[in-house]
Image (cartoon, rainbow, N blue to C red; front, side, top):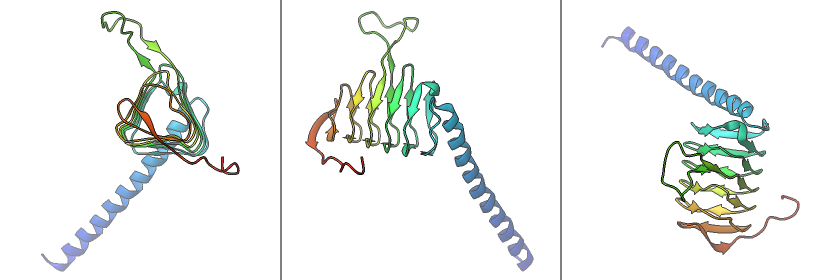
Length: 177
């Protein structure tokens, strides 16, 4: 290949890289603005890392400094409250609606719904599923792949299917809480 062709292809490659990186930044900013004004309370400080999916975002209340990661899915048929300084890792699923189990499954059957409360300083690790009507209190860490079917006590490490507390965690000092 002759020298002018190499220079030209290098120049085009650098333009493509610049556009791709610039486009990624624009998309990240657009996602932030879109979700900020979709949530019920329009939080001013939170981050969205990658693509997330939320049905009925007007039923979601997000605290300050919350991180929402790639693959998050929230089915907000009822209210979802996410406290300050919480992290929802990749592929977390939060459901507020379900079909009643006392009748035969039927798509025309009305769904039941119950709110989900996630406290402050909570970390839901990769692949956690949260079922309707659950309260996850402040300072809880839920291990990867756990299924939360009932309320979790504050400042505990919870793992398993269903999620159960296995260890107490230290509480935060009063000035940082």
